[in-house]
Amino acid sequence: MTIPLKYDLHCHTTCSDGSLSPLELVQRAAKQGVDILSITDHDTALAYQLLDASNQLPLKIIPGIEFSTEWRKVNIHIVGLNINPESDALKAGVAHQQHARKERAERIAEKLTGYGFNDVLDKTLKIAGNNNIGRPHFAQYLVEAGAVSNIKQAFKKFLGSGTSCDIKQLWAGLPQIIEWIRGAGGTPVLAHPAKYNLTRTKLIAFLDDFIKAGGQGMEIVSGKQIPSVTKDLSSICRQKNLFASCGSDFHQPGENWAELGQFSTFPADCEPVWKHW
Ligand code: AMP
Ligand code: MN
Ligand code: MN
Ligand code: MN
Image 1 (cartoon, rainbow, N blue to C red):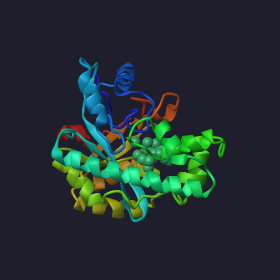
Image 2 (image 1 turned 45 degrees about the vertical axis):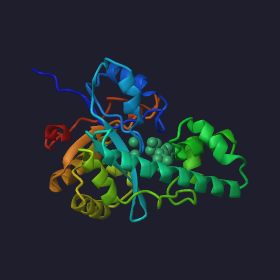
Image 3 (image 1 turned 60 degrees about the vertical axis):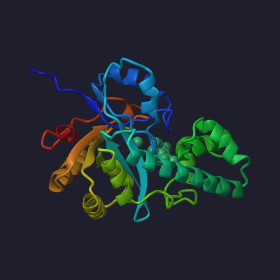
Image 4 (image 1 turned 90 degrees about the horizontal axis):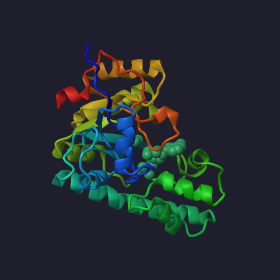
């Protein structure tokens, strides 16, 4: 009997909001038994430049990215898999989103300054330690400032959906994101569909727009999830004729629901996205 290869097609490094460098991440993934890995940092493919400098990786890499967009006032994430990070289309996408990230960071900092916090942007940029500043870095700032006791509370009170710092209108629109991914030779995949709190009707409406714009897949398994979610998502995936993907959405060690290579079983009745490459 042949043992199936283990795919983890969604995770993060220090190039966005993860805690491991690209090389550390690859090494941890290999230890966790991952055979094929896609690093999908938020709105950047910098990890692939950093990995290029080091040689001989212990597993196979499929280049990827996780783009942020807004659809009907909801923050939605689209993973681009099997992209060419060096393509003009991808570079144009990254440049646009990085600009949006910087502008968004300024607006978030203004809001927090309005609440009486000091030196917000400078301190948060230091926490980010790279150019790819995001809400988790602001959350860390708020924890360090003593405003909240943990990151979750920071999202709940200041940064998460429905709060004044949840600024999303700067992201490129869905058709544009899909065009960049397809232009880079990649496959657009809806990230973690169960994490947006969408009703089933709204999720289907999203998928219709996504497919119309050239979207091709959805994650039916994101980390450890309850079996009823996997069942629901795989049925929608089949119904919409989409390719199925899976990934841990790993950010840092210690979160056992999102550990590299550790996730719910991939349903046999869906067409894996990698069959198409
Ligand atoms: P951004 O890309 O700057 O919009 O930040 C989004 C990221 O914040 C997600 O990818 C998660 O890593 C993190 N995040 C979102 N919501 C929460 C939450 N409620 N608690 C902790 N982290 C969160
Ligand atoms: Mn993240
Ligand atoms: Mn995401
Ligand atoms: Mn992610």
